[in-house]
Length: 94
Image (cartoon, rainbow, N blue to C red; front, side):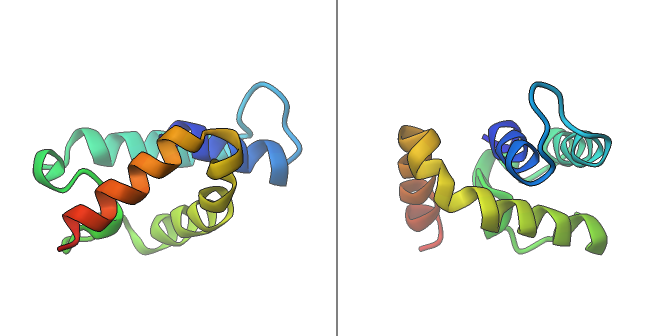
């Protein structure tokens, strides 16, 4: 889902068409690296609900901007994934 959200952000904000801009590509690579090496991913599912914030501050702020922009738009572009994310994040936060 992170790939789709960053692509959506990049297309709409940076006016790219097919490929990600350099900044968004770096952000995606960074996010994948953190997700891949996260020891808690099996149990947390989403970084936004994690108590351990392993992203460095500047990257965390960039991710927040992407999520704030792309999150609501996911209902239009990928409604099944958006609803699944919403349901899982509410269930897992309890």
